[in-house]
Structures are given as structure tokens and as C-alpha cells.
Image 1 (spheres, rainbow, N blue to C red):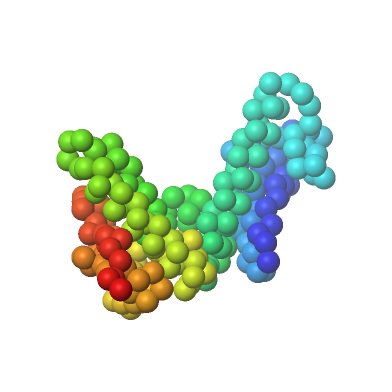
Image 2: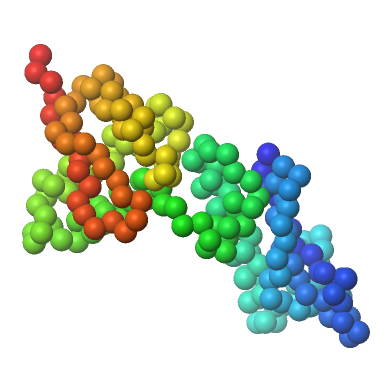
Length: 203
């Protein structure tokens, strides 16, 4: 089931001059949350069917653009949570929308680390080290897709069972020999994250 996002005027809070606050409502699996957009509109200025403010003035364009960004942001959050393959509800979306959900994903962290390493190649890191980090990320993505049908996983889910399964995947599916253990800190990432080298088993 997809998330439903719609905007509506809160007529219960209508002022005497016919102006009402515009709210965004999100519904998923029968649950919903709604929050004020910060815009006040007259009933005659709102197109309920098209979900836009009527008119072509610069102010109208700015408001409609902002509403479109709100809708897109909520949809992006839903898509991200859906790709993780973990259970979530509309309150989870609300938390992330307001920036209250702090947990990062493993691949998300790897991207941050790789960007940092790439910026320091020639100083603190070599091209070879950067290559190993990228290889590790590639293997993780392959593992997540093949064994968990996911594109990322929250850091809180990276436990001994996950590491054991990933190690087995490397040794059996990819026939590589990890030269270090993968360790992840769910707090601030300072470096380095140990990685596996793509060293084939002699045949």
C-alpha cells in the first residue's frame, strides 16, 4: 500500500474573514498524521481537486512549489523506508520528516566514509585504500540485495548475526578472503572502517 499525501484547509480553524490554515495529511495503513504547512489561504483560492493554490502570481508559484517539495519529501522518506524492507508506520515517516529519526544506514555511512577517503587520497590515504573501500561497499550491496532483498540496513541491525552472514557470503558466494572484520560505530564516524580485500582463494 502506498502512502497517501494530500493538502486540505482546516475549516475548523477558519477565521472570520474566511482564511484557514493549510494542512498536509499523510495516511498509511489506516493511520495518519497531519501538520500545518504554515500557509493561510482563503477558501476561494484553494483548488481541492488539483491540490494547488489558484492563480499565477509569483506568490502563488512560490506556495505551490513549496507544497510540491513537502509532498516529494514525504514520498522520498516513504521510498527510503520501503527500500530497507523493515516494518514502519506513518509515525516513523513523521519522525523522519521532522528530523527526529537519527539512525543512519550502513551504506549511507559507507558513502560518507568513501567521500572522506576520496578527498584525502594522496595525503592520508592511497588509491588502493580507496579501491578497497569501494569494493567493500559493492560487496555489502550485493549481500543486502541477494540475502535480504534490501538496499541498506540501519546500523542498529548490524550485529554479530549480520557480520557472520556477510562473512559466509564473502567466502561462499564471492570466494574472497576477508583480511579484517567489518566494524561499524553507530555514533560519529571517525575512521577507519576495516574492510575486506578482494583476494581470491587459490585454486
